[in-house]
Amino acid sequence: MSISVGILAPDFILMDDTGASRRLSDYRGQSLILYFYPKDDTPGCTTEACNFRDDYSAYVEAGVTILGVSPDSPKSHAKFKQKFQLPFPLLADEQHDVSELYGVWGQKKFMGKEYMGVMRTTFVIAPDGKVKKVFSDVKPAAHSTQVLAALKE
Image 1 (tube, one colour):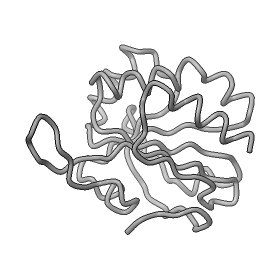
Image 2: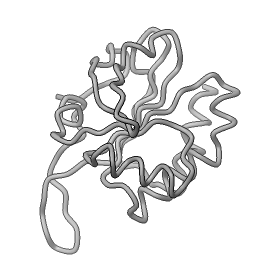
Image 3: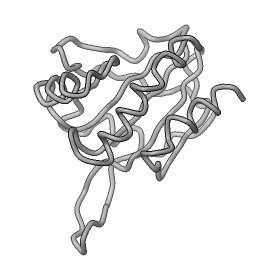
Image 4: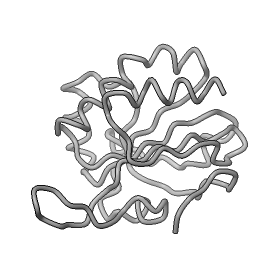
């Protein structure tokens, strides 16, 4: 399944970095950045998360909530979040059910090896719960700037 602009973002419940359950529909009524990334504390994922962190005040000012999702455990997320002082929740999709639901789990290739994993993708979700924008094949370094620009559209 692939999630496209204009459809209602599929609801889900995942555990966050503190062990609390987060339900997507609990964020209805606010703008949301739902970003999927492959792995905690790896170069690209750290760059992406730290750019969201560095631009965090602009998101707060715009009334936007950020949620990061990867297949890592809540414990891994807690370490990653603490190490880089990330001010937003990280959700554990250990069985990659939500990644599959959103169409971001698939065949990847790295250094000649093929494997299944998360394809770096971000969804901008409007207050009504509908997908407003989808960023695929995300380049971590410039991504937060792209997302902020899209919020102004």
